Image (cartoon, rainbow, N blue to C red; front, side, top):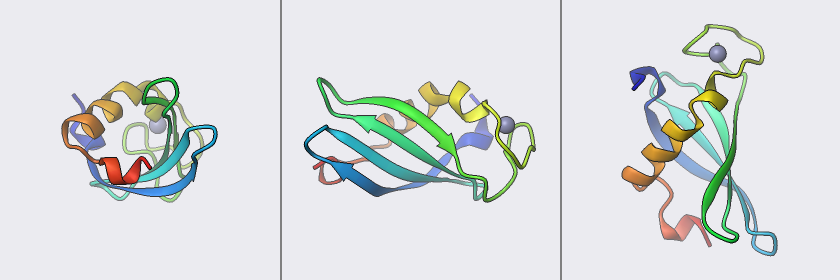
Length: 92
Ligand SMILES: [Zn+2]
């Protein structure tokens, strides 16, 4: 998988317990940032990823909107799971 998309950290940005929607900001090793959207209902799952335009995309180098992060959503989700980047304390 693409080493340019290694997640360095994830922080909780917003949550709505009623709807089960959680929003996080993830930072990649190269400084790229993106919003991760998760829904805890009925089961915990990633619903979207949106790159923030703070630096050019590490894949296509565009400094405006592209779909690279969306295309790699499953890869980000796997990293979050395997590295426990969103622990239980950040899901409640
Ligand atoms: Zn791109």
